[in-house]
Image 1 (cartoon, rainbow, N blue to C red):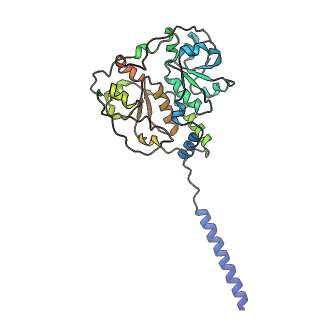
Image 2 (image 1 turned 135 degrees about the vertical axis):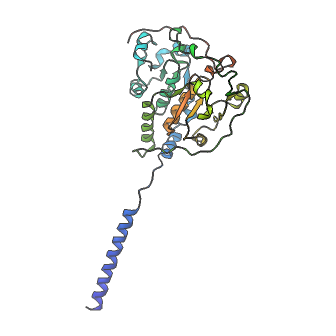
Image 3 (image 1 turned 30 degrees about the vertical axis):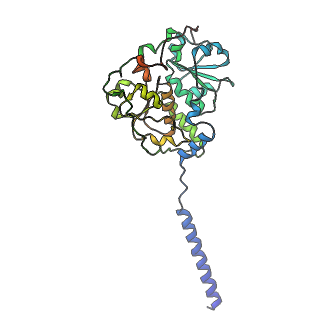
Length: 322
């Protein structure tokens, strides 16, 4: 065999080896890992879906709703039986799980979400705001505020925390600690589709609330976030072991890193309407165990509150039947 043939065969051998090696390397290269949480939350910030955006201009009083009722598309989340007993004229009855389907019938009207007390409606509000319904609101205090015949609030106000051993009357709030944010698994790869998937998960889980007696009895069992200003805590005190994460609690501020994803997170506010919205939002972000403390401070220190308190129902007309 002459030298030219040897050189040719050697060259072909080397080329084949390189091709096999390159192919092997290509097969061994892992697919890029998608950070679904980052993709989704970046999309949310860019589209004005951060928590402060969701909690902007989001409530309406019974008086204001009654004055301009025909301007709104009212969705009522109460049971079909209670809806038939009495509801706001023109309201549409559905469930939390199906609220996005019903919202599609609004034909451009701003939506007002209604429930018994305003707490479940806040979950629905978050789903709607994160689904493009930017002018959605809830009826403050729910049907309880519309007419005394539907009052579910009065029986749930109280002073169970006044004098309680696990209520601190001075500001001994916990200093923030840095944790890691959740990891989201999804079959989707774009922010809008991941968000839609997470909203559906939240709606399927229904309202997530917890009673004040459970939290007050063993507050150390929970990661408690008191969603108040520092001045309010100075005035009223707080549940022992609680943190105060409010002004920083946004995606833009990277504030969700101050919540412990491995704990049961309990948020409380004045009425549980804001804390319910936060609980829904946290569920969408991937926090697995989150609760809203039902009836908020109104259920714990009602007589001491100088504002943000349940007073009485209105006396607005309603209709019966389906």
